[in-house]
Image (tube, rainbow over all chains, first blue to last red; front, side, top):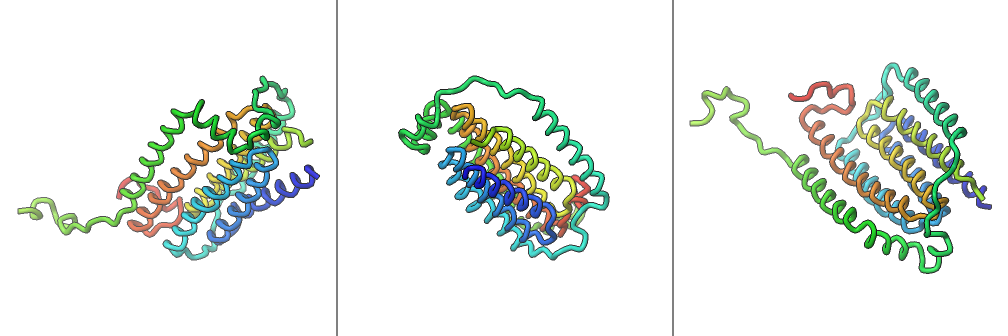
Length: 180
Length: 100
């Protein structure tokens, strides 16, 4: 049963990723990316990370992807006949080569590492959200605050960048005759 | 029980798909979407290791990666809007100067 679910989520996610990369219309690409994100949330649930799955759906699918779709609608892109670079086949070969190398490394590497204390039984005792919250506000408190400041900086930067520029008449004229 | 290598293999394939997408697409919004695919592949890796090693650190990293992805998307799209307004360019190979 777990294998069936894994195979379903993995195949649909992979097909959605390939469609995101290869579809012509950018809006269709965004919808394929949405499919990918939802199936990855399903994989997170299988890995005992329910809170992360919900965050994935709310933040990724609900906020980030909607931002992408808004910008796509704003720019009103037309479907282009040439949506890939001219010499993309070289990149495809290189990518498949790197993928093969990754698989070889994966097969060669031993799986080791020290086990932690958060076994599934410990997590399920109080619930995954509780475990995430306790860890986030004890061990990762400083990182959490830093991410808050970081997001604030990113939002301010985005607003400053995308603001409608004030049209200055002096910019078109030579500098000597502009201002009195 | 699904082995850890299944998740790692899935994440490797997804990462390569995103990387190829970054390299071959011309539309810059789709390039940003491919970056999101790569970030998601890293997330799967982190959560799988977090589950199999009985540790919460991987889930925490994945949460922070999602926050960073949100910041990256907002800034990247703001830059794209500025470029589109100035130059009406929609493809990455049309943006070939640093200042205009």
